[in-house]
Image (tube, rainbow, N blue to C red; front, side, top):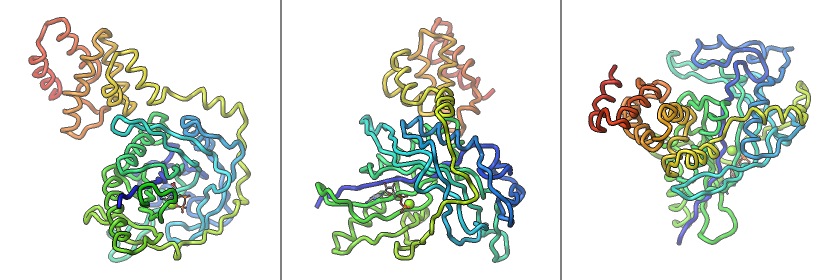
Length: 399
Ligand code: ADP
Ligand code: MG
């Protein structure tokens, strides 16, 4: 039997605001535990949440960039559950009326374009963290992260392979960084996802039972976790069993997934509208003002690189995969506008290799865009050969 994989992702994206979603405490990462948690974040009695306008603006920016419906009236709801890192006993989220409704994004999967539906993106607060290390057998609670603004981006079950899921995740990652609404740091948990996975016999209309893989924070793990889970489900079904709807954890060290909780044990969150927060109302002028601030988006920039600079689709896609790299390229090209292809070769070649080798971000490149542009200019005017230029590049790289 041939099996078809069905995947839907829920992506938690931390918004890059200075202060929290409902309080004025700082959101900066890495501070000493509980130094960035005010009365609202630690849930002292009598405190009241106040919505951070900037978080709403960032959510709308995302919605506009994926062509989504913006709900001009949206409602915050309490999601009730007990956990030590959630002192209020509920998370403030959105259920029935999220700020961002249906939209979509087109992604490139090995040269083939595919449009993935996005069901919704809602605003919510993050919880705190339990720290299990260094406490002599006890667990510590750090509430610095409590109240950090998130948007949870929920996709339709439109992906059909681990490769498509990774392409989608990368596109959303690139988009939120272009929009400057998230720092995209996956190690620090600023961008993480849950993958919902099911399989069905090829040609069958009805979806199979899904499992949900929790909190995956790297592109490679998403791919591996999904591939492992698909194999596990195939083995179960081919062995005559049935897949149980449950939440599973991916264990990267042992390359396996294991059960966390079944749907029967799943919480009843008793959602209801939060009486402490008014409905959030956006008027047309608010939305148009945000639209006017949208930067050039990755797709448009990629198209422009093909038409204006005569680059191949491949070069244009590589160079526009992140905003800083595209900026670097354009700055370098500005020094010799009639050699866009040669500059692209250097950026995608020697420079990319150097950054890769030393695991550096483009913003920390020892060779600036202007320096690279000037080096390529010397090749272009025949002062030096390409071979010599490589030696010069190495010398510039090492200072
Ligand atoms: P929950 O709160 O139970 O996780 P959500 O509606 O927030 O529910 O998210 C469900 C996610 O699971 C969505 O991304 C959706 O596309 C995906 N999904 C739903 N059914 C299936 C299925 N049969 N196989 C794979 N993914 C699915
Ligand atoms: Mg889920």
